[in-house]
Length: 437
Image (spheres, rainbow, N blue to C red):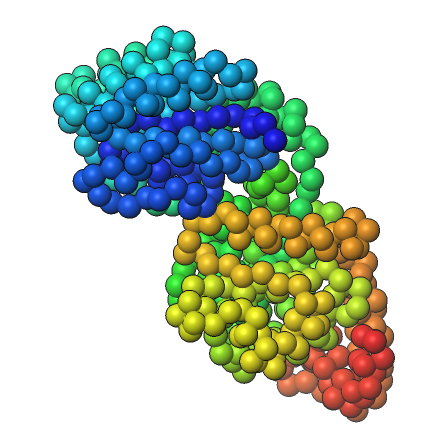
């Protein structure tokens, strides 16, 4: 497949060319590490799907290394002579611009030539070290950058390669590809609406951020639930318009069984037309009693029609390496995990939210696509849960008729609809079995 855009990374050793290539492609395609010597020894090319487009990224050695300039010039001229769209990114590290850095920029200008310079951007890296706005940094009248920025036609961009933020990549591509072109193609992007469910601390919010490629949801490393109500966010991801609904930790003490059901219904509404996938987020490790309790609740709330739209996402995938165990071995060794997967048709993925790896997101979206195809393109609507709501009301009315009359003391509230329903289930457990089978 011909790439929609070829990006060539140029610059001095240590400016973050390889790390920037990894940020663009969304995974570790190039070797990257801190070093005083050039890590990249030869020109390397990798391709991948980025924001719905096939992007080819060419990483180059430090341009001041012996013999590198001629080699890189040949590569750049080949790119310029091709009919494919191209972009040259000349890296400059934000916290350090030395005489050698200036020499590297001059060398980059030489290898791309006058024609290539029209398609070149300065790429400022190490954006996390920037305290003030980038414009103040580059427009410092006493600094060396203003004439360089002017030479590049004031075309520049900022990268923070430490953050798993695809928004900065999307913004870079928008600068190269006209915005009206992006909008015209976005009309045909497939919608994917995903609802994340699970215990507090399993990594629902972090997983939502990983899927969308930027920090859309508040997350922390604590055990308490950070998300207190269902919230949604959207982004263009891997050629799809993806909406993620983050929900509260359903086993948290502040949420009752009734609130679980209510939040699920709310999440359907937050997903606009309805979600294509309910993703049950489970932290890798020993299944706790809280996990088991949640699984039992999910079995009651997700009857047959809803189960077709659900799958499992195991988080903290880095623990598998620590335990020297595959995810398949972990599942086989835990009865509760096996039963959970059986309940959801064996559908699952693994995330390591601490790693900038877009392949794990592609795997998840491919699973969702397979699920959507198996469901005939249908998504989960509120109507699927309507039967349960209607049974809830009928059952509660029956309990009210069976309960003895009771006068409530001041400040004492009558049993809620859900409490009446739970009471009824205890009296007639077979009723619910009839509902979900």
